[in-house]
Image (cartoon, rainbow, N blue to C red; front, side, top):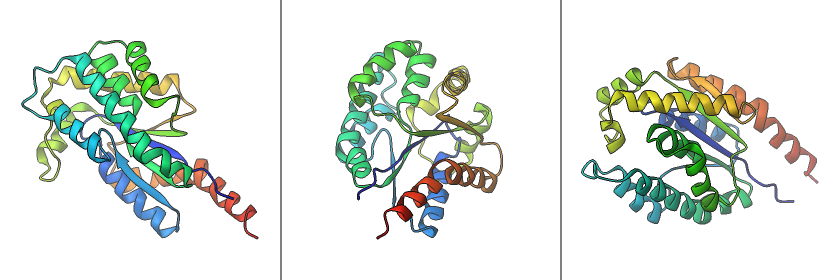
Length: 222
């Protein structure tokens, strides 16, 4: 019997530590011999990575907010069809760096397009597929941007160049979404040490996802 995989997304403002958290969580899943895949938005596959380059290019400061929202949705659609859905059908846990909540926070709220309007655009793109669980890594924008400035590895993209007020709006949007969808969105204090963040992620994964996967596997052993 082929069990369907779990779709788990990671959200947060710039410099919230999602990349590090995903890498460490992946290491834990490796240690548990659990099949998983790490991917990202926008990107993850060739077409979407090319769209990512257009969106995040620091030279593209003239990009219209609606154009930005539509490009994100287009990249999201191709990523889902080509990579995420096949992995879920194969029973793999998909850990995705950003998904629809990012568009609602950045374009819908911070850009002022309206969350409902951006949600409608993305409904066409995702065809009702939503994650079973979303981790929101909450960090003060000043802290997050200072991390980016201090990092030699993190790419500086067009969104990093926005004024601090924009990033405060993004955080406010995420907090509103977490209040609206408490059963799906789990808020993690990302100002803790990376070890504390990862331990909390593992705790929630064990409680909400991994115990069920282990139980299902045990029940299907002949």
